[in-house]
Amino acid sequence: MRKWNRMSESRFDEPRLALNRIYTRTGDGGSTRLAGGQTVPKDSRRIEAYGTVDELSAFVGAACLSAEAEPPLASLSRILHRVQHELFNLGSILATLPEDVHPKQARITDTDVTQLERDIDSANADLEPLRSFVLPGGSRVNCDLHIARTVCRRAERLLVTAAREEQIPAEAIRYLNRLSDALFVWSRWANHALGLPEVLWQPNEAASGSGE
Image 1 (tube, helix red, strand yellow):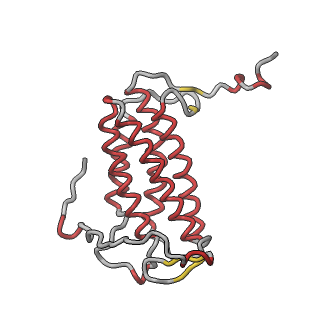
Image 2 (cartoon, one colour):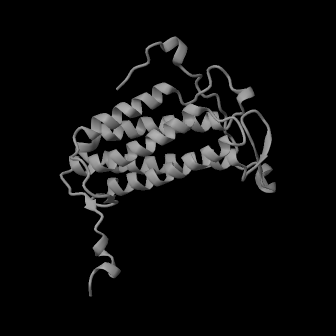
Image 3 (cartoon, one colour):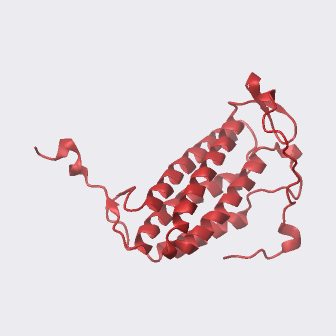
């Protein structure tokens, strides 16, 4: 796993929170606040994007738990745990307008994108080339990863849309693009590591193609 090359320049500030009350009633009017204090509608592009990143993190957490239950997937579990922290960093920067970003605020960086590419290459090296499209199945963790992949694709689409209207860090979009690819490769690798077959798409398995 890649280490920080320049720790003093790369480390983020630790969180400083005191969450004593969970409900505030301030959101009852359909608005919320960004990290800089700005009030925005809850259905704004930016809020929808980082809300979907939050949803993605939850599904990655489910996949991580499924992987933890399978000893051959210990390395994958560790990667997914790291990805959860990266997704929270992504949410942090998306919840902040560019003019309010602190130099040491948590964010997604090109280092995170590069590490995902290395993870993809490493897992893909163990896999046979695809001869058909694959369907979710074969193991619980495979299905969890496919669910996370589809949510990741949706988060990426929402971020691309938001970027047409306001400043969105380019590395944030790159990260989600690579992560969706990684989740696909990891879904295949999980079944491979567990010695389970992939579920291949068979067009004639449909009712209309059965010939009956």
